[in-house]
Image (cartoon, rainbow, N blue to C red):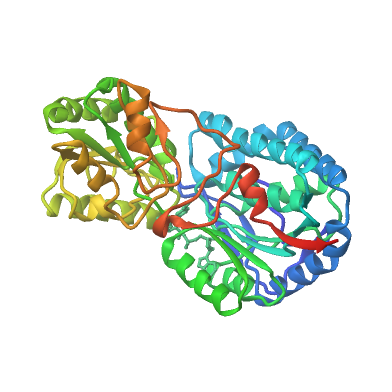
Length: 462
Ligand code: NAD
């Protein structure tokens, strides 16, 4: 894999301040596939200064021109989609087909949606005797995780560019090659120097320096709740905008009238996809007691089929963490019906697709985000109990409801404390807002709602 040994700052690849480097490891075989520089606070400062210097020019650029750059960026992502998919497969470990169909394709759709929104959004509106201008917030510090490495970058950078903001990105240490490829794409798309800047590095060093930099006006973070809480606190103390996309423990509620086999099979696929490393995964399946045994049997059968089809986890630490959760599930009395804590292969960071039955609400595996291919199946007696269980975690990111009648599913979904619900297997919509209720986060990404996160209003009265 090609790796740059510098930072992309002010339109060029520049030497990093320090000499430390981060090894990029392929989790399928443990091979080092590249090295990127570990940025320091000085690198972050240089990047923020470049972003600040570029702000007056970019924020004054007509929206149509910003739309043209986004459209060009989309085209570069299309032209380089195979390289993107291969890079993500190499550093994240996801199967190539999944990298092509999801990791490379979703960012193309999102970049395209913001090219359109930049061109059509009313950045100026009349309200009575006022004209309200929607102006960019300023310099954005974007901190992203590794699980959907390009999607999470584009979900922040594209709306920020559309809004007229300038950006410093600190990507996850496990997937920096994808971020470097993205920086090349931004450059090729003709985005002016300083508008987008990339600093690779460690979270507690480069990430923290970016989150705390006084020259950053908005911090947009996706990752763990623990880090998000600290970033939110620092932003609060500095009276600075913050957007947080954190964890989830989403419920897949199968009502008695649903097509049980379909709901279970789609539910298992949802959890196993990306080896379970999806913040919005439906990791708790809720089934009525009369259908419980049948659902468990179907889920165990479906999970067994995934044996060889899922990739490894991103690194050895995540593999250990997930296996620890599986051991905890067994220790707390849940019943393993597929998979288990033993590594399925000697080489690579693999975890077996795992399904637990007889999971009760109080168990750790029913409450905490595992971030691996592990499904917990819970039993409910009636709809009220299903709702109480569905809403009974600190999270509220996503979810699903299945019922024979769509209106019945919608009525249930409306009572769920969560930011997104898929009805009878509804498809991903790149224009629909995504984000959390409760401790799953603050703010929304994607579509129009994602754009307004990067805008602030100014009212002029006449
Ligand atoms: P993390 O929160 O440690 O890392 C996310 C990003 O934050 C990375 O770029 C990291 O370098 C940076 N970071 C880390 N410490 C920082 C700090 N002190 N200040 C500023 N930035 C910092 O998450 P992780 O270790 O990659 O994953 C751990 C867990 O987080 C996962 O198991 C999962 O539960 C959760 N997670 C959630 C999502 C999501 O999409 N909601 C994505 C990835 C991980």
